[in-house]
Image (cartoon, rainbow, N blue to C red):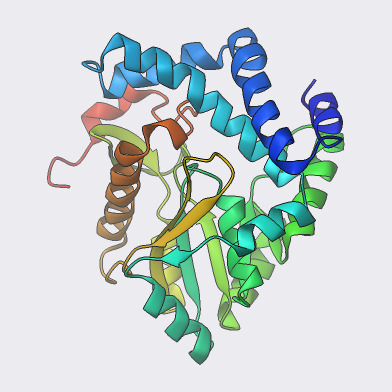
Length: 286
C-alpha cells in the first residue's frame, strides 16, 4: 500500500505531493494500522496530564509529519533543491565548520524529528563529508527502493550491522562526519532517562566520538509552519567523558526538542518498550 501511495504521489508537483501525502497518511493510513492508538498510548505514558484535545491533535498531526517526510525522502533531486535553502543555525555550527576545515571526524546525533534526511541533504550540499547509518527494511523489494532513494540524496550510506561497520569506521578514521539517529529502543542498550521515563538507549554515538576523538554534536531538522521548509539546528558539542553521561546528555537534548516540537517527533515509535520492566534499572543519579 505504501509503495502504491508513493508512486501515485510522485506524479504531483512537489509542494502538493508533500501536503497530500501527509493528509492521506494521517486520515486514511494511520487509523487503519493503529498509529493513532500508539500515539495516544505513548503520550499517556509520558504526559498523562496532557489535555485530551491536545492528545487528539497530536494523534492526527504526528502521522501527517511522517507522511510528509516519507514522500520527501522519495522526491530525490527536488528534496535536495528544497534542502539547500534550509538555514544552518545554532551554537554547534562553528564546531562543524572547524572540523570540516581541519578534516576532523564528527558524530552528529539526531532523532526522528522533523525530517533528518533534509538535514543530510543540506549538509552534503554545503560540502560536508556526511555519511549516515541506516536500518535496512525487512521487505527486500521495498528496501531496494528505500536505499536507492537515500542514495539519490547523497552517499556514503552504511547499513546497520556487520556489513556497514567496516565502511563506517573507515569513514570516521578518514576525517568524515557520521549521522546517527539515536532515539531507537535498543534491546542491549543502557537503561536511561528519556523524557522522564526509562528507555533502553545505545551508547554507540558517544563511544564512536571517544574512539575517534570526534566532536559529538546534537543536530535537528525542524519543519517550519509552511509545512515544506526547514531550519537545521546544531547544538554545542557534548563534552567528552563517561559514555553514559554523554549519552544522557544526548537524550536530554532530544527530549528538549521533543517538548518544543511535539507534533514533529515520531510518537508512533516504540521508544519505551517494556517500560515497566526497565524502571527498576534506571539510574536515579542521571
